[in-house]
Image (cartoon, rainbow, N blue to C red; front, side, top):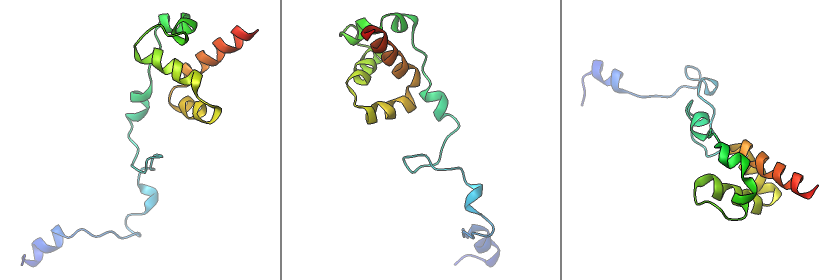
Length: 104
C-alpha cells in the first residue's frame, strides 16, 4: 500500500468535465489519433520522367513505386480510384489526364 501522498499522484482518472473529448485530436479513418506528420509522409512528388511518360508506365515500363501505382490506378474501379485519389491526387490526375487525352 502506498502512502496517501504518493497514491493521489499516481492515480489516473478520466473525468469528462476536466478532459473533454473536444480537446483530443480527431481520430483518423483507422481509428487512431492523427499525426501532424501524416500529410507530409503521404505527399510524394512525381519525377519529371513519370509525368512525361505516363503511357509507357501504363504499358508496363518500370518497376518502381510510381510505375506500379499508375497501373493500379488504371485498373481500379471508380470507388477504389477515389480512395487512391485521397492519398495520391497528383498520380490519379496524371493517369486520368493521359486516358482522356489518348481517347480524344
